Image 1 (tube, one colour):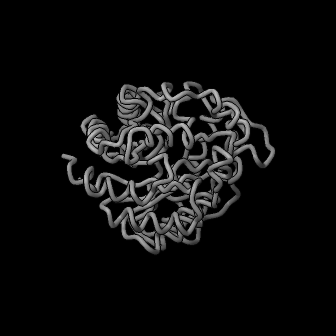
Image 2: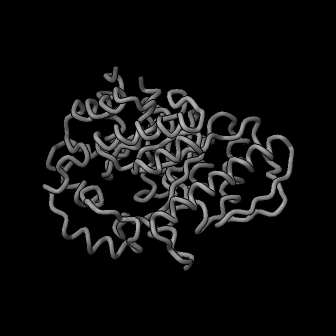
Length: 331
């Protein structure tokens, strides 16, 4: 069962080398697959890190054996979709069959930094799916040895191809917490990564993804349906709650954070977060069985894989505890 449980490397709170080492440790503990968030800034100044995700992915791929990819890479603001496609194709050529590309509509925290206009959510979603179309067309044409041109509402591409391609293009998944985007992902993308959702939201998103896949003439049951799960584990319940408040106050916020533009601003908002605000938002416990039960719920719901992110700084202890007491007990 551990083959269905992946690891989220907390690259916003460790040095890049430690992120690589933790990915290796996670694999030895029984996790399969590593996801690295593509951020330009950490959510809080106190977290302290925001390395280039693609550099970290390239390094950890050389030291692990399972699959890997970016969590929620965003096309079209800091990085043109063609550049994301090139980076992804190169990693997939280096490690055939091990790499995926996950894209999302993005958040201002990391994407407004180049100074461009930050659109409203509906336009961000439209830009996302135009980028998915561009990337998939570029992958397909390049794999066939053909050039391609693209002229969309948001993106243009002159006649070109990716000259370095793997035997099979990497799958393109869409990361989202919204049902509308999930349905469009079913129609247009290769898979789904549900992010920041409760159990009830996860069920609805899964239904919308399957409906979109059917509309697109695809079998949603055969497509990747993955979930990014935030947890807070520590040796005591008090520590688990304290680290959630300190390191992951966004987990308690019941409003969209897509327009927040700086770690300092989020830090100010986080001062209003109280421990009781986390109720029902993520599992917070010292008991491994609480976390096992939460992961099992999502697997039973129909998600193929769950990528686990522990929100604290106790990375090694978390991996050991889950490797010994959680992963072996999943059914």
